[in-house]
Length: 340
Image 1 (cartoon, one colour):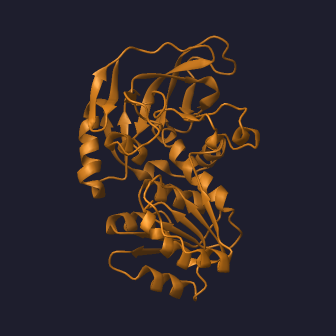
Image 2: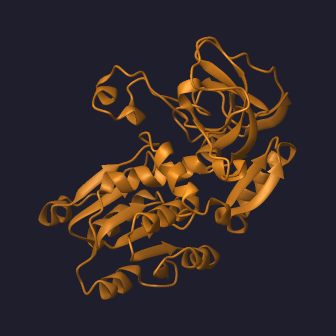
Image 3: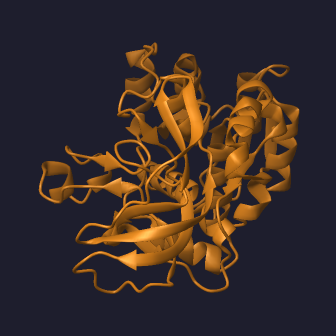
């Protein structure tokens, strides 16, 4: 079968590999669609400290169950599924307090073990979620990015009437925007440096958009909020240098959700945190958010296909990587169609 394999940083190709055999407790999924994520790009560039090479990447995918390993209940051959990439041990401290997404022995499909950019992938049966019939498999491939949004919003604990500032109008910023709207957050400010992305954010429900390259973001936001600042700030830009600005823009008692994996240090002025009693929370992957996102998709409150800009076959994966590297303004979400 064909698979997109990363052998080492900057060394990748579509290769022939063997079809895996599902072990006990696993299912074999014939992959229909898989989305390219920023995390996949970090693996390709050698910026992911967790990956083990060689690796078939891809952690956003959907498909159809092809075969079952031994001892698999509640899953049948032919089931349409999407896959939660979080594999946890169930016994360590984070797992015991119901935070398996930061399990001490965490494995992530597409990072620590092979993922969805292949024709068939074997995954734990506990990680597959059945897709309702009226949700298409291309839409179901995008459940995982929305779980990232659901997780960071949950970590920030929104209150009724809270304003939300989203830094960055890329894919994760857009899923946070849609998820926040679905949760009833009415006023949402989005910043970016690309006007096309800001226009898309406006189409998807942002109440205010600001180009941080051409506008004074702090001045504009403080004017919008009558000097109070913003209770909720989601850092979907993942630029460490922006943390001081986030601290200044946060309202007293504000919550800031951080999503980036950069190893670069951030300047943190303790006075800003203490005088406002701010809460800074990290958010990694998702904590069992797949059922919540599938329910919102089924209700029509999320529109994943509005985020898709390109659909390409697996053979054109290297071209998609080149586009995302050199012409990112052309793309929102790039979906790879593997079988359908």
